[in-house]
View 1 (tube, helix red, strand yellow):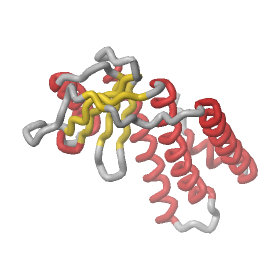
View 2 (cartoon, rainbow, N blue to C red; view 1 turned 60 degrees about the vertical axis):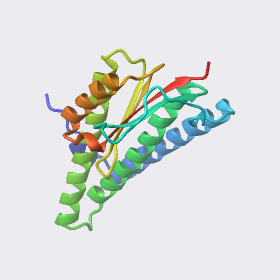
View 3 (cartoon, rainbow, N blue to C red; view 1 turned 45 degrees about the vertical axis):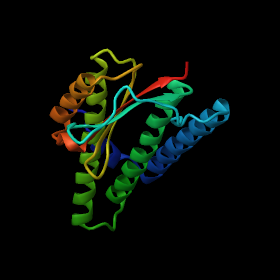
View 4 (spheres, rainbow, N blue to C red; view 1 turned 180 degrees about the vertical axis):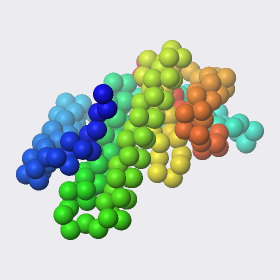
Length: 191
């Protein structure tokens, strides 16, 4: 059975689509506010960096090292929420073109193509995170950026160059990106 979200969205009334889009936006905004209020502290990467891995010009992948963070769950949840907000906004933009009765065929075709591309990117990011987790990492965040860069963050006490290369090989196979376009970094909680 083929699951076709695009067809189901096309069959919805305009009012239903608007209510659904507004509900998703309110839900995401509420989650962001709750997370921000409940944390009460920054989840950004701290300046204290463990240099167990350092980049050099001979390395195929940009090695950032292992940075210390205050709360691993909040750090990864924040990154995922930010990515979800961005992708939801893009999907909503494409869907609005698809439901616009005055849109020309080229605009509709482009919106369908962009929506399919966005879905492929989301699927690739999920597959990439799953495959890297299978190497034994407790949490992974992978992001395919619009400029072709692949940014990967893993929860790890340390990263060796071999660890980074293993992660990069998986990323290269799944994304068809060159090694120079892949960044691998590690984070760990403050001890």
